Image (cartoon, rainbow, N blue to C red; front, side, top):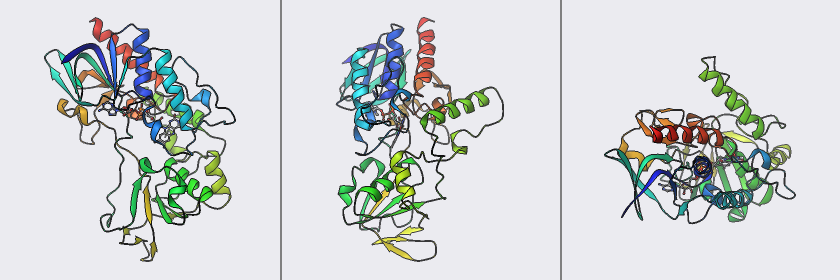
Length: 354
Ligand code: FAD
């Protein structure tokens, strides 16, 4: 059966909800399709000890401040899930959970969203599917010969799962540092942290609040034709959240330059020496989950869809939200997605009225 909505939002994590908030405010007829059976997007699946890198009030979606979590300056993922569930309810957002959009295609003057439970004809689509469902692992030689466990950030839960094991954590970003710290502080695993370049910790007094300001300033400079300020990457890669700081200060976070290959029983370093490992945890990032947009044929040479703001350049009825700086400064953060969501919805409202 084909249903109708002026706007279909694909994805009901924080980005889809921020879009929903603005669509609701403008009185647009819309539906949000979300593959998860419950609210909270990717936050439902992160590891137990994860803490936000900004205080609650600086991790808020439009309209409603995230309440503080008792006893915690930096809230945990469960707190974010509760906040998003409350947000969805408070604004009465029409989210259909457990619905996977499989394809978006052109259908006369409309876009047809084909999902596993039916289809929607829409005048515009906002894609807000995040990156969590597309973990990226680099092509390191020997990945197929290693006989131990290989996991990605998305599969890591707790140091309890690695008791007594030798674990190699790969990746010099926030996930790698936080997971290496978690293992080093709370378990009895032997941890080796491997990074492509020496880890760059941000100064201890810098958290997500400043990162957001820096990302915004960079976007403004670029949009105004001024020179690139370097953005967040110019400051460092790793926010020194309390557990990372504790592990670093206790001398437990030493990174080794990346190994050159995996062997059957572990890893081989650039000098030819080898270390045994029971498990490798790849904290090597994500790619945008855009498979449902393939029928539109919009992807550029680097895999991204060219956008002007959030609007797909070659398909003005499609907006992309929350995937990273290329869809709005800091748009892949709680506090950052509000502004691009507002702009996307304004643009769509104009399209609908024309
Ligand atoms: P998601 O939360 O992934 O939501 C997308 C939703 O779309 C999901 O429910 C998914 O199931 C659904 N979906 C996907 N494909 C389809 C489909 N085809 N059809 C229907 N539904 C679909 N940000 C901060 O602000 N502060 C932090 O401290 C912070 N820490 C982070 C730590 C880690 C380890 C990671 C990975 C990210 C962190 N982020 C942080 C970044 C960011 O807030 C998250 O990545 C956020 O989850 C992105 O939200 P989203 O709504 O865009 O995507």
